[in-house]
Picture 1: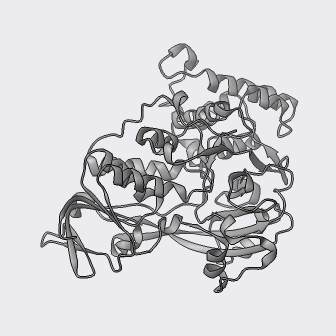
Picture 2: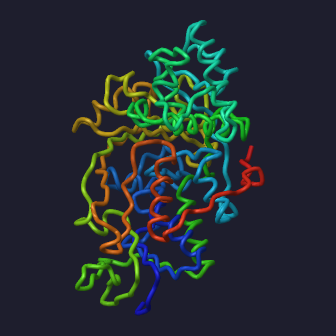
Picture 3: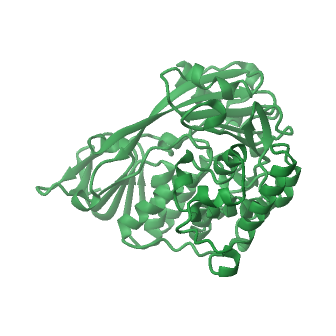
Length: 444
């Protein structure tokens, strides 16, 4: 191990594995280490025995739940936007050859006590029971504006500069009511809170367009795709990519200690008495706890069920977003459900997650609005984890630390962090101008 590397990556969570793969493809010499004896870190995938051991302290789950090895329960479950950045990264790096994807069946939003399909375009807006007749017409006009909007075609701007006009000002031009703004902002544009309303509308419109383009890509019931056998395949796919380009992987390396020189710059990593030198260290927050701060906490429930989530058209895989205002909360709640249709559970079984940013220390009570929508559950586990963000200046110490995973059930925020880190590490933008039409076709 006594060699010198351009970059040492610590932790095999999804963010670290994507970065390891991207940096290896760029020709950097990468050493990737993990203190655990398995891939995935916080974003690992567990079979039923492992799930039981983690949450119940025993590895003998009830027989009626089926075979342990047929379960692939992702600890950080997130769907991918079919036209989104992660899919572009997968195509850019050719990791798609290691994975098979399938469209997710449904995308829903909770509104006034009921679950509704998210309308993504003008046609769906007219059919949606989320709005009354006059509101549907107003929403249809707004959807047509967004669909037709082209940054390079001033005619489509209708006299508005979206880099200057706020999202609230744009929406007010179409007279949409608060109820409509709520589901568009949170379930279509996937904003985490209402701060976007006072920011330039460009990002809001681009997010809506991404949702509609992703939905159109596979003609499915949602804009999302998900790997067969779950997300556990993703870190391993990027690990293979890194290895193809000369990256070195070492699991089960205890006490990975980052070494610093007199000027407090990272110069290497020591494990088991050996030190590997490097120019830069990339890691998750657990490897450098004195360079991160706690910024929040995620509460979640993991449920095993024998039926799909009610009122989602019997969808075997689905996302439901519960906007904050609907629950009188400060943050949204997310339902994620996947099943045997994506090979993550035995036939007839469904894995559901209810997640939210913690606002209390009582996950059972806080998650109740989401759990109540699931119907009867066979088993339920409650869990919380702290969220951390880096506090260091990477120019000063050569350490590049990822942020913890948020409670969202989609990948957009995760990939934004990865791409920002890539630019900081390399000093250049990641070129993702790929032809998506030639990309990983989802399996029907």
